Image (cartoon, rainbow, N blue to C red; front, side, top):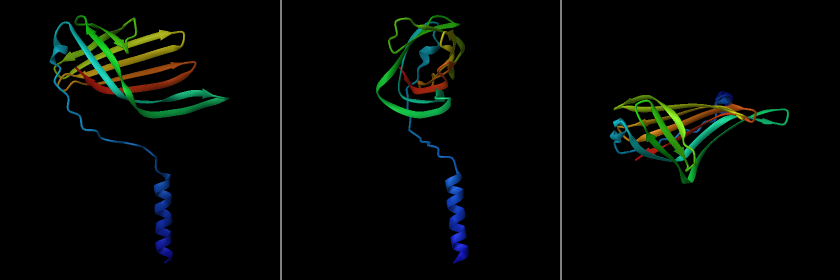
Length: 158
């Protein structure tokens, strides 16, 4: 009887000491988006899923805030490939588009990068598209007086 309780106590301690993480798998089947290889192209990407994590000041210290959200409305990115080296990206119908550098453009990947600086800090933003299935991922990391955080959106382009 003593051995059984010892085993259960160890099992409870080991299980309780592990990290509490959430992972999930969602089937994805997109459509090829080969027009990203053309010299100029218009692409619309949408996402309802975002994950974010980072540090924010609270009182005399900082807190780590993390979460995943499934939105009821889609966030939208309008992408204009304007040549071999540059793209304009308008997120959620913002009046002025951001300029991204095209880092890679081939049958397996389109990679766009933007680095921004302003009064509230600095930002590095990446946008990747897989032309084979139209999937895309947008990541942006920002640091400044109010936070040090990153956000990742996933979705599909058409």
